[in-house]
Image (tube, rainbow over all chains, first blue to last red; front, side, top):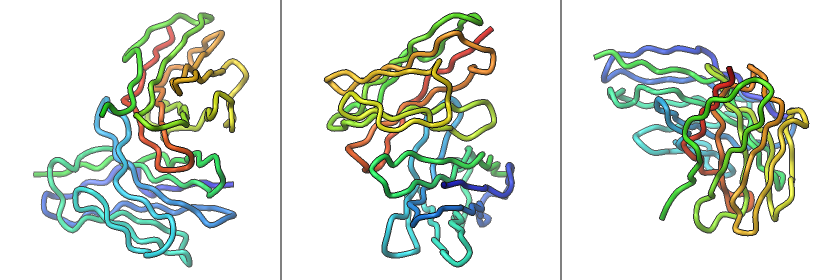
Amino acid sequence: AQSVTQLGSHVSVSEGALVLLRCNYSSSVPPYLFWYVQYPNQGLQLLLKYTTGATLVKGINGFEAEFKKSETSFHLTKPSAHMSDAAEYFCAVSDQTGANNLFFGTGTRLTVIP
Amino acid sequence: DAGVTQSPTHLIKTRGQQVTLRCSPKSGHDTVSWYQQALGQGPQFIFQYYEEEERQRGNFPDRFSGHQFPNYSSELNVNALLLGDSALYLCASSWGTSEQYFGPGTRLTVT
C-alpha cells in the first residue's frame, strides 16, 4: 500500500526566500512520486515527477525535488519564492502497476509574503 | 489541443438525489480516473476506466458508479447523495499508465 505524509499544512515564506515543502512516502514497492500544484478553484497541474533514474528532478516554474530512498522523502524546493507561487501543493505516490492511480497527501498551502 | 474537460462546473443537489458528472479526456488518452477532493483534503481515488471497463477501484461505496464510452469519455454517477458527498470531483486522463492530466473539476454541493 502507498501513502504520503506532508509535514506542515501551511507554510509562509517571504518573496525571494527559499521554499521548502516536505513530503514523506510509504510504499511497499518502488514508487513513482509526484508534486502537483492547485490554484484556487482550479484542477491540479503537474510540477514534476520521479519515476526512475536521476534522483534530483527539475520541474516547471523553477521547482525541483530530490528522491531520497533512505529517508523515504521527496521534498520540493525552489530557491527564490515569487508571489505567483502562492497555491496549494500536493505530493502524491503511485505504484508501478498498470493502474497507476495516485495517492495524495493532504496538501500544503504556501503563502508568499511581499 | 483541448485538455481534459469536465461538466458541469458547479452543481447543487439535495440529499437522496442522484447526480451524473461528465469528463472528456485529453486527445489521444484512453484511460480516465476519477478523484474526490473534500474541502481541505487531498484528492482520493474513486476508480479508473480503461477500454470501457472499471480497472481499479478505491475505497468508495457502490453508490459511486461510472461508465466509459467508446470515444473514451466518462461519466461518474452518485446515487442517494449524502451531505458528505459534497466535494470537488476531479477527472484525470492518461494514455495507459503514463502521466495523468487533470481537469478543472466539478464542485458538487449537497444540501
